[in-house]
Image 1 (cartoon, rainbow, N blue to C red):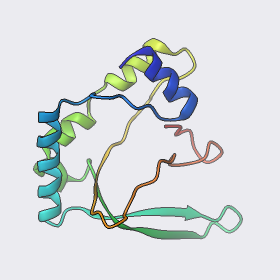
Image 2 (image 1 turned 30 degrees about the horizontal axis):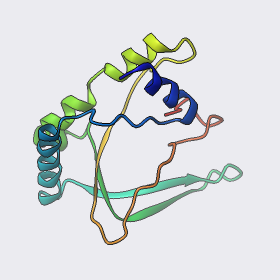
Image 3 (image 1 turned 180 degrees about the horizontal axis):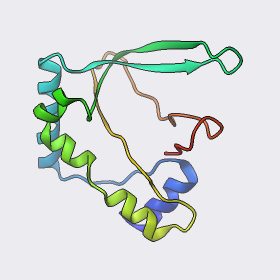
Length: 136
């Protein structure tokens, strides 16, 4: 992770780091994710909306996008490499080194699988700044 990645992350809310994970590790990660799907551990990804005026919640499933939270005990036992990657503190460390405006006080990771056929997962932020302090 280089300074320009952190700058882009702070400016845009995301950063693309080409070749951050070697191809052989990507293959191992994909194998774990495929195993999670085969064993029925992945669930449909959904968007959760909250009506600010009423507090009512709406859940919208995304067609063809599956996911699992890496804190789920079924995932931790079935996908140890995915879990280790999610626990890597490099992002938090580099943000602290390169930015005096921001630090990460926690991180959450999920695995996702796109089943094809037009299914996609749009680039987004999980919440608005007036709801909580998550920004990336």
